[in-house]
Image 1 (cartoon, one colour):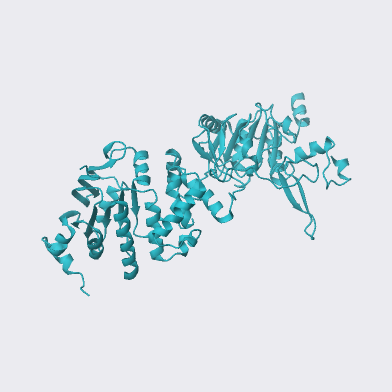
Image 2: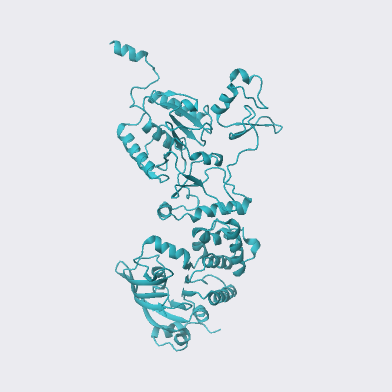
Amino acid sequence: MTPLLQVEDIAKYYGTRIGCTGVSFDLYPGEVMGIVGESGSGKSTLLNTLAGHLTPDRGAVRFDTRADGLRDTVTMSEPERRMLSRTDWAFVHQHARDGLRMNVSAGGNVGERLMAVGARHYGKIRATASDWLGRVEINEDRIDDRPASFSGGMQQRLQIARNLVTGPRLVFMDEPTGGLDVSVQARLLDLLRNLVREMGLSAIIVTHDLAVVRLLADRLMVMKDGHVVESGLTDQVLDDPQHGYTQLLVSSVLQV
Amino acid sequence: MTQIEQDKNAPDTVMSDYNFAYLDEQTKRMIRRAILKSLAIPGYQVPFASREMPMPYGWGTGGVQVSAAVLTPDDTLKVIDQGADDTTNAVSIRRFFEKTAGVAVTEATAEASIIQTRHRIPEAELREDQVLVYQVPIPEPLRFLEPSEVETRKMHELEEYGLMHVKLYEDIAQHGAIATAYAYPVKVEGRYVMDPSPIPKFDNPKLEMAAIQLFGAGREQRIYALPPYTQVVSLDFEDYPFEASKADHLCGLCGAEDSYLDELIVDDEGGRLFMCSDTDYCVARQAAGHRGSDAAPTLEGVA
């Protein structure tokens, strides 16, 4: 089976400081990969590098494109990469404000990606937007409201709808549940899990919340100081941590 | 000696202390280069080193610089503001060029070789030997959707114009129809999305014309252009097509039914008068004997 995403020896430096280095992995279709680690461990740098927001200093990120099979997204032309990020990729930001247009209605937010890839029929765009609002549990009568009038959890769900509307195959998520209270987090996770299963999505989820990866991720990478210190199946890593840092991380979680 | 005498008697309104048409020749060359480039890439915003002009930004400094760069002593200039020849902006710019260039001026659209305009395209069809210069406040059609200049340039470069339709979507979602009534975005030759300056969308179909159209934005330092007969398509949705709308009335003065109308409040009882915004068009029609329902008998003498 061809991997959907093939990452080979990625490195990103900020001057002489290490952002992340020596990261390699394969992600297969339908697989969810979690990346955990403390603040400053390089997980967001890694995610942004993979998603094309940062240019890596070394390495290759190959994506299985629909047309030409595996292509290195680092060396492909910018229009191609931007096209990928509007169609086959999606990026869910930690803060919904970074991923939404706050002065555009919910329907317009969801419809933007459709219009960006050429949809020009208002009725159909609106019907799709309304369908997606339903799927992320936002009442359809809120379609003309601006995200500013939404709660934090709703904004995050709207951001997810906006990203998934074009049927991407790979979703990058940067702390998707950060800053939400636990009950809202639980519902969001439930929603994400259903969508991932339903659509057969592959996802890379960066988080410092071990509960999130336990629920969503099939595989786990633990990062420290820009390096991957441990990787494996999620339950394996969490239940039998081998590396000292992973042991510390797992034991730091309060058992309620 | 006689020469000097003659000069003194010659139109004393022309200021001999200034170069022809105010700008120095180097500046005109710079602007002409930008104009040529903009004609070569229709709809593309060419940056230029906009100069300080003796009028505030927002009063047509971009249009004035473009006009100054294309003016020759043989030209006949017409200046309109919202279609009218007699409003402050039009009068002051016309006087400016009368003083600094000494060119002939006119109010008749057909007689002008260069027409500088703010917010309107004249009703009369323009010819191949005419140039229409627009004053543009904000040349970037994506500006109110995307504040970053770096990002909007990238969007033009990569033809990422989905965002423009988001604005039209928002219009329909809020108002049930595309409510954008002026500065209605257009796509030029299937490539660049362009802001046609704040002309009413009624004028959009006229953008495909025989005359050269130049757009100057002084504060924003951009020039763009439409060569004659360039394809210009107003953006829309399949199920909400573009409509060139105007007030559903006849001109009260000349009875025209095909011209863009201004609404004038005439008393405190809500009385109103619709009249052509293109004053030259209206006056010419009245002179030809057309009368609207509100034309006062006293107006006949004036017309």
